[in-house]
Image 1 (tube, rainbow, N blue to C red):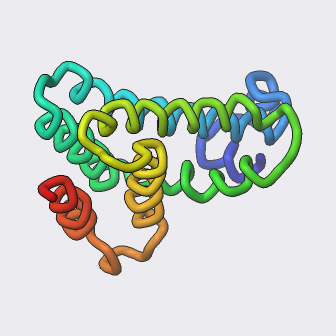
Image 2: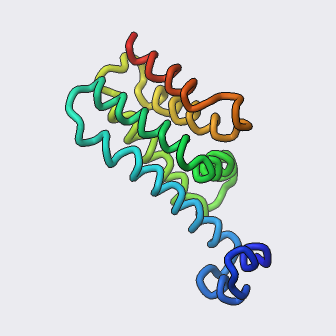
Length: 154
């Protein structure tokens, strides 16, 4: 908390005024990153018409988010495993938000995906998200885009 206060150029009690615990501060940071991701992806794709156009738009928006806000996506991905593995109601809203996100991706992709669209959506989310955790240069957003969007052409 001291490091955060120093970086934000505020006194530590001010942080505790708004965020009574580290857990509450984390949840606020995660929510902010996650809502930016959702707004970026679903703001464009849900208004499109044809399936392929809609799916490509969604996936390109997701990959653009990776390109432009890698830090937010890293936070989401780095902590995702923790809130799925830990028991307790304090993480339930985060699990529900993430599952809702994957379900929305599945809804967009379900028109043409022959197999289970939620499994495909989870795989897409995992591929894009996990690439954010790799050191720069190991898997570029262009490579991720090529892998995912080319798979739609099949």
